[in-house]
Length: 583
Image 1 (tube, rainbow, N blue to C red):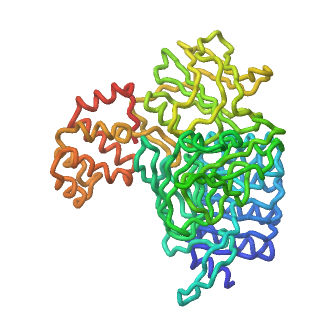
Image 2 (cartoon, rainbow, N blue to C red):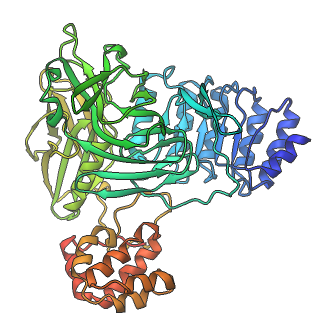
């Protein structure tokens, strides 16, 4: 009975059940023990009845479990239907580890059904990807493309050298450890913060990313403690040993690579990052790459990480290479990115994973599409999303190409109807997120029936991608959106979208503050804003706290602005096509 008392008193626990009976006692306890948030059952064989009992408990409203590790528990595809029901049931679960289990293609497809349910809150799913077939891998890739906040990956447990200390605080050298065993302890119940698209996801949920300069793609993030953190929008992952502040920027490969002979012998395989971090704080960094390893054409020994330093460029051999990431352990930082040696036997025909992005203009009476074909790099997708949003284009989510494509190859864009497409030919190439990306503009006009878009290889004529667009895919944006689920991604709110204009053009701040006092601003915040000497300084001070505003708070700000500055708000609405995304 000691284990049960431990569970009732602790926020985290590892349980070692022996029989089905003890499992049922534990799982029934979870239903009433709201303080338990992390449970590790790894290494314990679970029967079908035990899994059923566990899933029944996880579906109960009283269960607050967020993280569940079921590594090497003897699970098979027969268990996945019950696990999928948990994902579909709006449970509190945000991280699930199912590695070292024989789930098979059928089992993973069952999980995908649960992951696609709008009620699913899962943010991290650990799976063994290598045993899965190509179609199932593609289904998982499509799932991640549909939900950028979801990470599906294989093992992240890097064995890294971590300095240790004795009880007196003196160093005791290094030891090899797994971060899965270094779980941050907390005496406070987890409070779910409101996430944004730029956030990192870590052991306790989302961690806010501060935008230093959006035009230059400069960000800062402060991780609250040791653990693994992943940003779906940037594609970076960090394993940190302690609380750490990290700055992240993007560089253009052309500014660095063109000055070296490497451009003749190596191919760009991912974004070039400029990362700044405290010495020793980062145990491992996962740098994204878009080379497709599944084809068997690429040897992982060809991968290098380029460090551009004052005295020149240094090529580092990574600790390991995964399907989407190149991993450095105990890294040093300067502008760094992934390169691939070009072998003469292979030439430049390196298979890569790619994505197609489709955007349409909000004016439904005269439909124009933008179609991009790019390497599968989240940083590029994010840059394109932001660029298209500025011109009021909205993204339509469609699956990526099924087969590998090749950098430097040319592809033909066509449609089932006689549409005007300019240009009809696209070259698949890598461009930095800060550079303009190539796309085809497709003029549709009035869309009253479905359209099939196709991309074919110019050289072979083989079909590489197709998608069906229905009139229902183009939904008019309403002037106000009454409600958005807290976990659903959303368009930028009006006050975020027009922040710069509001700071520059609001002429009377005090009446605005009076309307926000008590609703959005505390007494202290109200006085701090009023104390500023100029109108623009007051507005900047007001917006300095906007990171903590909920969408309901932003809606209050929007309404107050409409009442105090109606002509300005009307002008900004007209500039943005009459669209205001509210709470």
